[in-house]
View 1 (cartoon, one colour):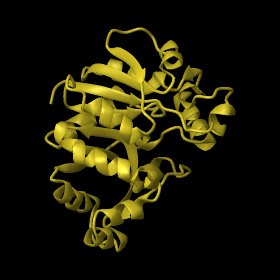
View 2: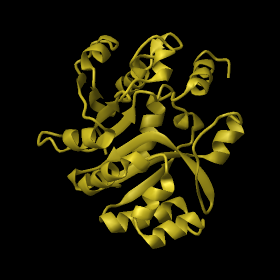
View 3: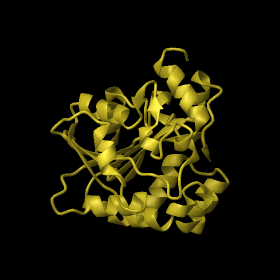
Length: 255
């Protein structure tokens, strides 16, 4: 794997966002983090990486997001769909798409070029790769961090907002994501939709994370890989006030 097409999801929640409004904006991606609009930070990390051939920022308000970014020929800001999955489906199946596609989010304010490199190196050969951080690694460094943990045999993990889509064969995974999007915070419902055996294996912690993904991959006929990130900062996004305080402290050298 050499160059990738990078996607930064910078959409807004429907019906208003109290978190954004508390920072005097209606767009989460424009919340200032250590004095910089949040969306600018992952975009700059991707620009600093030698892996991103093109960077597409997808948002419902592309004009305002574009104004927050510095001009660079590798960066385009485009209209997003109504949901994450529908946005990716429409974007990734453009006949002119260049694969593979690296997906991250505008609230990944601590993303670094080193994280990008590690993730892509470990994702080599997978059709779908999902970045994760172990609970042990996170709590060792940030015992106060509050994350959503999925528990498996051998450990618990939180997502790192890094995804690799390796080829057009990922359509089945995106369709599954779209059908379960409303349940993305209710992990067991999603696992149940993938089959009773896989659901029981995860629920009873009889399977490791990778074994669970292997089962999902067999159902979807895809090679899916969990990529465990060495830096726990990869799992800290800016999704609520406590996250904002922690990320600001980290960026200002106070944590």
